[in-house]
Image (cartoon, rainbow, N blue to C red; front, side, top):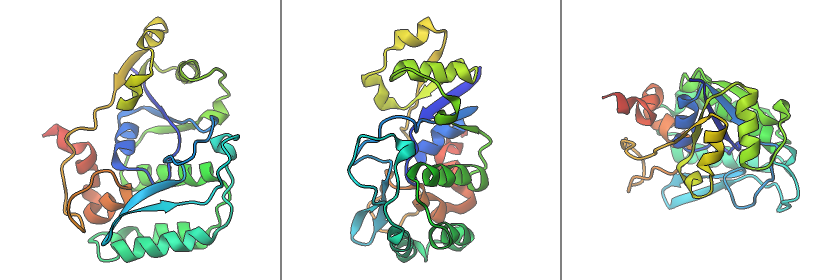
Length: 231
């Protein structure tokens, strides 16, 4: 079986996003689709001493554009995000292990395209921090037509996949029969059961950016995403 996952790029996603990447042989960024406001594309949650806080990249409110065409309005947010991350995690056990990469990301580069930023962060964390060997593709480069599920199926066929891993919320709208007709096995990811780790500012929160996990657990991060299932 060649396992495929297809998801829009998100800003420093939560651990479940990387769990799906690790399950896949090929992961496709679905960024040649419509951008949606107040979603995960340009923001994510971080834990602070005052509770959960959104880190949001300013990209405007226009939804008449594709994710891959979303421009970042200014670079001022970069320093603000880095200062917030440092304030919240500089005392975490493994912060210094990854500090150089993120400092370069936020302070030495200027990002003008949301999709490029997101894909850069996700692929680096996957390969260089979590040790994931999954191959990455950009849907824009694969040039597959169709809407919604038709496009997904065309993308899977383009990379010669025969098993599709979907997020659990998609069960509400996916037509399973379309995948059966195209001889593609459909599997829904289960996010249940992630173990807790030592995290700042109780109570424990699973639904925050992956930064929380890697700064606190370092090289052990893969255990808290998928490794625990092998026990």
